[in-house]
Image (tube, rainbow, N blue to C red):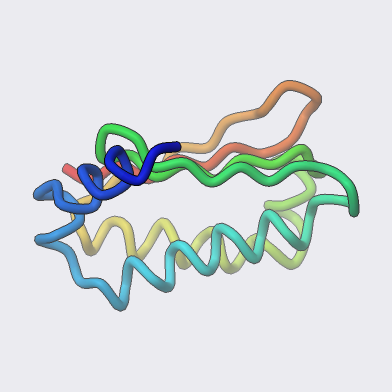
Amino acid sequence: MSRERSETAFRSRAFSSSNAALIGIIIRNLVENAIRHTRPGEQIIIRVEDGVLTVADTGTGLASTATGSGGIGLKLTQRIAGHLDAAVTFGETPGGGLSVSLRFG
């Protein structure tokens, strides 16, 4: 991703009007969750595009994440996102991994 695209996304109203510390907690939770549930040698992709932050992995997927140690972090992420007027969506990546997107309203 180009530096210009990243800077544009972070300059958008969504990021600039939100609490930076809370966004940091969300990003940390999503990345730590991806690391925890992705086997060595597999991919974790972090993308910011059009005001949407997405963390995707090729790990064990949502079912094991929701029932395992990552469940509390993802629930906290949803709670914080709601406080920031943001939406969190969960999806599956090809191969069964987890994709989490954060979109600010």
